[in-house]
Image (cartoon, rainbow, N blue to C red):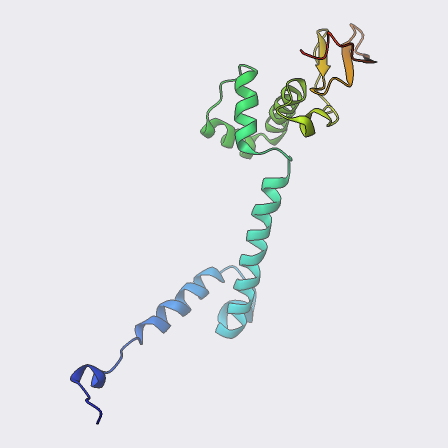
Length: 170
C-alpha cells in the first residue's frame, strides 16, 4: 500500500526562472548584429561562443609574457623596484611597453640569480642593457661564466668562458 502525503501533491513552481534566464542572455547579446541579438536560440549559441573566446583570451593574456605574477614581484623586489599590485596592473593596461620592460628587468634578475637548474640554463632576455656596468652570470651547475658589457658607443660585447671551480659558487 502506498501512503501519499500532502507534500507529494504540491505543485512545483519555477516559471519565473525562464524570463530571467532569457533576459540575461539578451543582455549579453546586446551588442551583436541582426538575429544574433533578437532570437533566443541564435543568441544563446552566439553568447556561449563569445564567452568561450573571452575565457581563451584570458588564458592567452596570462601566458603572453611568459612570467608569472609571483616571480615577477619577487624579482622586482630583489631589484629594489617597489611597485604594488595596483600600480603594476595600471602599468600593464595603460603602458604595455613599460610593463614589458619591467618584466624583462625581472627576467634578467632571475637569470642572474636563478632559482633552480632549469632557469639557470635559459638564455638571457633581450633588450636589457646595463648602461656600462658589467654583469656576471653564473650557472648553478658551474658550467659557464658569461660577462656582458655595454660600451660607451652602445655596442654590447659578450665574453663566455668555462667556470673555474672557485667561480662556480657565486
